[in-house]
Length: 178
Image (cartoon, rainbow, N blue to C red; front, side):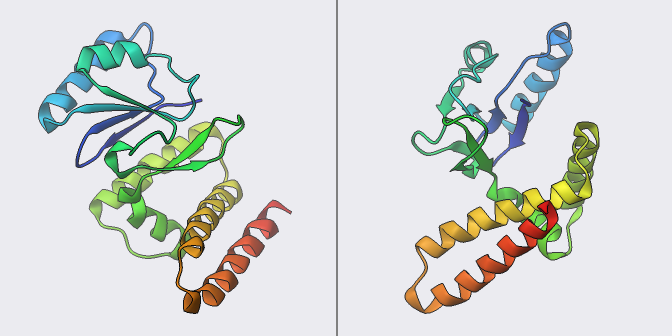
């Protein structure tokens, strides 16, 4: 399990946070500086109720709100989807990263912020041993979930088009994992 940090318009979001033991001073100095610089509240989002780890410590230090799973509205525009290895797990999608998503899936151009995010994603994937084929399959599965959600609320005249596009995404994902 890993942790994530998101500077959103409405909050500094800490996802499944874990304060690194033995490096607390440096961690808190950096986080304190970010919170002060942004002037936004801290929100802690857990992708599973058992991922509390450093939640209480951080919520106390920053008077932060805690969000477990998809209970209520999530900060930072985060959208929760069921998924993961445990029944209570959720997968989070940050629509603010949509430009990166479209770049990776559809090849659209990135601005400077998106290029920086892509470099960070590449470094993380390399450190986790995630190869290009696995990354492509994961992105296609994310697109599949997004399309399923869109299909559920689509007007009747768009459903055929969306169903066909969804079938193509599923086919591409299946060809990678085969």
